[in-house]
Image (cartoon, rainbow, N blue to C red; front, side, top):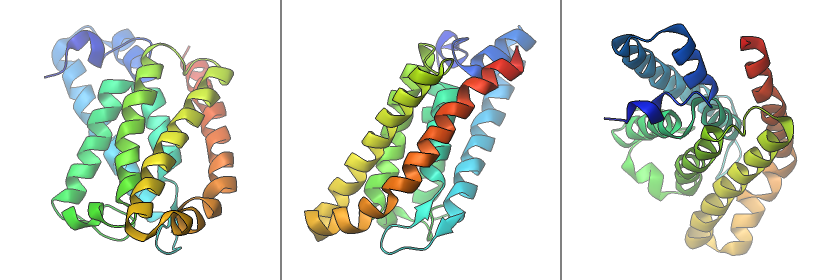
Length: 196
């Protein structure tokens, strides 16, 4: 089980929301479970909103992962993305084009692994308050995007070669993901201002 002080870190937006609204540990745990569950549903929805490019579709998942990590913090984001990946591994069609363990061995598996790694790193930064300021929020989102692309392009390169990986898994997404990154980086601090 998560250490309570880390799971409800008041430096994250969700942790702040939980801490300000209740002291009851059972309510906090229930809120944690609901948050993780709905976060994983958001990831599923973001996978289904796609431009079906081959072999890597253009989805809203990178933006969703980055925002979840920034708002939830490391522990909740890791649980959320982990639950999403677990659903896919057991065969539920949660990924852009299906599910199953073999899906993670395919051309998009590295990107999905990147989502998990990004949730850990960006969530860690969120735990230190990086989601409260525009500049730090955007820098953290950029770090997260680099992690996602590094793992995604690496696995795609192992399967099809480096040039193919850049051509099909990197270049087509740069501009769109840059705008998504900026949008997510700008929106996240507003969640803090809305809650105050």
